[in-house]
Image 1 (spheres, rainbow, N blue to C red):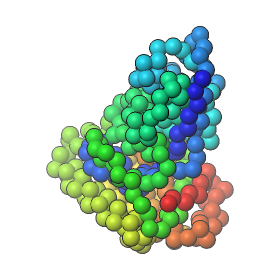
Image 2 (cartoon, rainbow, N blue to C red; image 1 turned 120 degrees about the horizontal axis):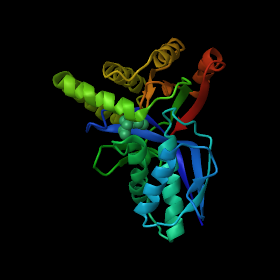
Image 3 (cartoon, rainbow, N blue to C red; image 1 turned 45 degrees about the vertical axis):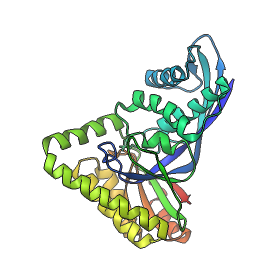
Image 4 (cartoon, rainbow, N blue to C red; image 1 turned 60 degrees about the vertical axis):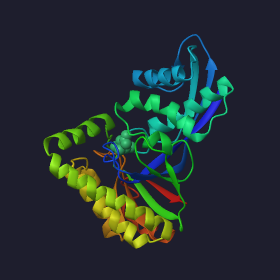
Length: 290
Ligand code: MEV
């Protein structure tokens, strides 16, 4: 028997462009996925899921050289298809449970590597940021193929996260961005440079506690995401409501096409205006990072 947890995540800067090689910044959220595995005749879960979850589970177990079957008890409050990293948190939780079953003591980077095997099944060509964020608490700077770098925040970030109610399909959205890159290589290269500059400056702002500038950078990042076609009318409606209610900045988070939008607010008090305006229309989460 083995047990493990993984965390929900939010991407603050650089989603999609990170798949193509830029840096990105994200943080884990307090919502967790917990998984318990016990040997069984066939591979199965206690919750209703598609075949893809079983295939991803098999890939993770195989990465631990665990050919046996297990009954997987999964429990979470993370909504799926909402851009909060359901699949990554599940993959990390299962990787931790598999490590425990093997009696292996692995650090978060090693757990993230095993979880990546599941993420490949879920998403085809993931950058690896989601499973990395799901494996530890806190914020990180991430670049594909490089060691993730933890970021120490000078002041905590107060975020409002709102779910559009519409599922975002990561695999399709990531392929759509790859098509934009292929069809308009020069325009895409300009956007990559812009996003890289945004992420580099955002890291400095996080370390210095410059919330005002972070908000501006979120808006700029959202414009780049619009240009590669991953925003949606629902996300745009949420983002303009956030801005009308005084958010410092707002953008989609994760793969877009639906899913969630995030807003940065100066303090917890500023969250209440947003909650009053949209709290009865959307599923809202408040998050404090750092
Ligand atoms: C999804 O949470 C983040 C994307 O950048 C995909 C990835 O990095 O694998 C859209």
